[in-house]
Image (cartoon, rainbow, N blue to C red; front, side, top):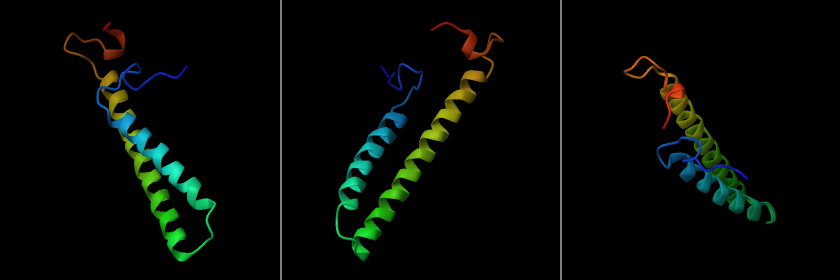
Length: 85
């Protein structure tokens, strides 16, 4: 069973939102691949691929930010990964 972003420690819904957007774009892209190729269909596929790249980049930034915050020493001198929630 996969964990949600909150269970993994992500405080905001950015990752969940990005994953939802990726799922939606993937469905749209899948529908377009079954259509006859035209300039409009190709342009739509490119836009969806751009959206997927943006969302993946956003997830990467969010994970990197959360990891950095976890590694940063807290006020008591211990890293956040050593503290109990």
